[in-house]
Image (cartoon, rainbow, N blue to C red; front, side, top):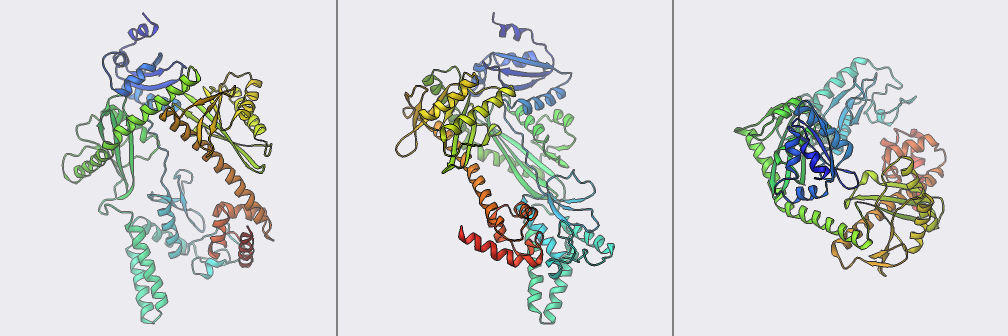
Amino acid sequence: MSDLKLKLQTLPMEPGCYLMRDTSNTIIYVGKAVKLKSRVNSYFNGAHDYKTTKLVSQIVDFDYFVTKTEKEALILEINLIKQHRPRFNIMFMDDKSYPYLKLTHERYPRLKVARDKTKDKQAQYFGPYPDASAAHTMRKLMNHLYPVRKCEVLPKKVCLYYHLGQCLGPCEFKIDPQVYTDMATEMGRVLKGDDKALRERLTRSMHEATEVLNYEKAKEFRDDLRALDYVLDRQYVAKESNMDRDAFAYVEVKGVIAIQGLLMRAGKLLDRSLAIQILVDDAQETFLDFIVQYYQTQALPDELLLPYGLDVSLIQQVLDVKIHQPQRGELKQLMDMVSQNASQQIQQKADMLKLKDSATEDALSVLKEKLNLASVETIELIDNSHIQGAYASSAVVVFRHGQASKKDYRLYNNHNGADDAANMEEVIYRRYLRLIKEKQTQADLLIVDGGLIQIRAALKSIRALNLQLPVVGLVKDEKHTTSGLMDESGERIETQDHQALFFMLTRMQDEVHRFVLAHHQKRRSKGQIKSILDDIEGLGPKRKQALLKRFKNLKGIQAASPEELIEILPKSMIERFKQALDALMGMV
């Protein structure tokens, strides 16, 4: 009897978590169980669907943790998935955060866009907003309607905002603090959706301007009212309810699960969340795991809507939220809409996911056979970029099980100019020396974008580090597209005879090209920006840095209005600065 079978027989009938390992001792799946022995043994008994069969075929060992309760097992499972990111687990962790408007608690408050509500406990926060664009649009409107402070640092004299009537000028004039308190109170009401007083004021001002035939001013007030309509109305889906409410449902088709969510805050539709993945475990358990994982990084709503009939007792133990499973009425109609959306998404995707997954496995299997390797689960690709030796850059992209692992991507600035071989030798040495020092797992295969010269340069560094890492190069045809591989001896290995492998290698090559070129262009752009800004008289290092931080790039700086530039530059300098910048940009 094998060690694995003996281990299966000795598992306890208690709750806990299990970690499945493959031939390279990598954790490929993490699960939880009420009874460990029953659950883990179920993988090795009876017939399974496509994904589970593939998982089981790769398991050579497993570990397990016993917990006191199923709740503890669920919490441990989530932490283990976050730590190990196993390939067969459905990765539902979502780090997306929504923007808020922040009214600072300063003597002269400012209105800012913020993502984190926890950093400044004294400030007032409004939102969240569906996206950064909506938050910035609302901020811009509020800054236009209310003369709150605009400057990061108070200048010594009033700026352009004061002359435009958009600031009271606290930098130069003494302002009664009550004025700002009243203004902050009214802004708060508007930002919470109560815009009645503001609308009445704007409407009254518009009529007064019309009566004295000041049509230009009346038009400004009319435009303000329209802007208010646009900013507020576009965010609301249920004005009669200010409740924070999320609704989730799922559909399973052909071993694939689609999970659909509708997220609302204070009656505003923030987002639709969708996850589609091939199943390994029970669909209901997978769905419940998703819900718990999702709220590890997202704020809990006032109410969570889940499908009727689902056992939510475990979720209620873990999440401090009111759960409602509607059977009738408007909320049931909302749940039906969420389920319908999941159904519409999954019908087409189910077969596509299986075909894609199968093609990747097939391509990796053929590649392993062609190169006579024990494993190609982790593949790294390296590419160089420069222009006549300038801004020489290299990039490493990593594919695990045929899928891009972007968290493992790395970028390098090289020191050998136009010498591609020396740059390859340098980046390989730096890359793998660091992995050795950090005791990280090495790749199964290294692919360099080039022929025998690049392969030999890579091997020189690999051998200097006493590593056993196979290296191949990507061979291109006369159209500069991937047509095959080259091994360490210079022998060509055909890939066009296998479509799945050919397309996988092409996709990998495109990705490393994209990554290194983006880095190279960014370095070149920064160098260009530095050169142009250095040529503008009177512009010091701090203001250069502030301009780039505020407007991101030269085009952004050039497009900035005088009202925006006044935040960073003295009023007396703005016209001269714009003329100089336009002239220098015209020479590029």
